[in-house]
Amino acid sequence: MQRRQFMKKTASASAMALAVPTIVPSSVFGKNAPSNIINIGQIGCGRIARGHDMAETLKYDQAKMIAVCDLDSNRMEDGKKLVQDYYAKKTGKSKAVNVKMYADYKEMLADKDIDAVQISTPDHWHSQPAIEAALAGKDIYLQKPTSLTLEEGRLLSDVVQREGVILQVGTQQRSSPQFRIAAELVRNGRIGKIHTVKIGLPGDPSGPDAPEMPVPKSLNYDMWLGSTPEVPYTEIGVHPQEGYGRPGWLRLEQYGAGMITGWGQHHYDSAAWGMDTELTGPISVQAVAQFPKSGLWNVHGDFMVKHEYANGITVYTSGGYDNGIRYEGTEGWIFVSRGNYTATASDPGAAEASKKALDASDPKILQSKIGDNETKLYVSEEQHGNWLDCIKTRKQPISPVEIGHRACSVCLISHIAMKVPGVLKWDPKNERFTNNEGANAMLSRTQRYPYGTRNIANLNG
Image (cartoon, rainbow, N blue to C red; front, top):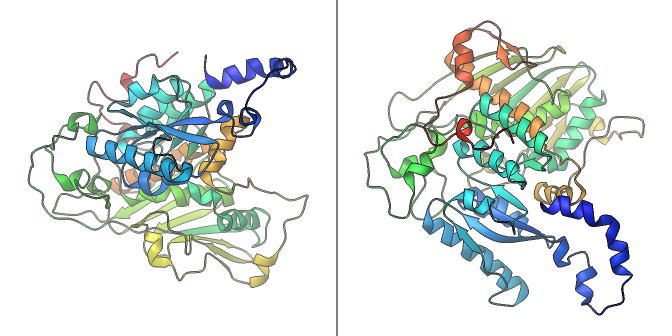
């Protein structure tokens, strides 16, 4: 029986049980009693996990990280050490927790002691483990982008909603107050009728040629490739064998789409919050982009994308704009960015540290108060904490799966538009292009057996 089902079925019996005289430790009834602790399994122990997801979740007493999984045994052992060292320092006990290690996440998902998982893997390994976690009844924290293709993303959202698990997407800008404030001000007409949004998003540079190398003994390279085509191993195409610097897979289209998905899902998600388009998408997309002509890395460099929405708003995205979101209306503008906030050491926002996190054409706009009868948006203090709270309450988190899928969809159709000339007409309801079948063919990819979302067992319950 799954943990959340057990909690529901035993709720009515709890009062009767408490009435029975007995002697038990006071900790059993506290907010952090063992029955209230959420046991977490970490899938992927690389840069984003160590510097962000694991680091944030470990702070919460209501959660306990009890297992780690990685396809690189060195990183898996490092992950175990990170967790055990954290709890040893926190409790003063050298053996406060014995963290389990799994070389295959499927074995972790079969562990009945685990209530929820965090997925901090390369982009091409996001949707499949998240879907399988949902089928196993685990709640999920999923790094963005939510999917590699539209096909995967739609399946992910449908399965998560069907299974009733809590999935939080790692679009943590929603938990930064300036993005909520900006969206609320725009939604409540403080800059008049919004007509244009300009999003600043950089491209990636080209890289060197990279010769084939022997696969490290610590790495299960075939499984790391997963559903993507088999290609020769080279270190800058995967991740560093020493340290946790920015991995090269981020700049290879086989595993993602570059900055349009890497940071794009953050900004498109935040922009949709202000535009009130979270559960839909644009009706057209057009793009131009430069791609490397040599070297291993092949994701887009400089680019510009134009989206048009049914509500009359036009969105432009380019590295030529300041990194952030600028809403323009008939009575002024609001600009919002991460400012001094930095998620990781290689966060593009670090270079923007001197920028104002929240700015407007008139300072009075930012001083405006949102009235009780106006639109007020979801408030979250921190993304991982909000996820943990929602696991207990069973309420939807601030970044639920369908909203995440919709933001990712904007990224993915933008990437397709970079490859297909002209204006592409998009049907956000049916998630298809209406004027280009060649573009529709790019909404999915071939999946290398036995990996991929099409090869998930028990997919239909």
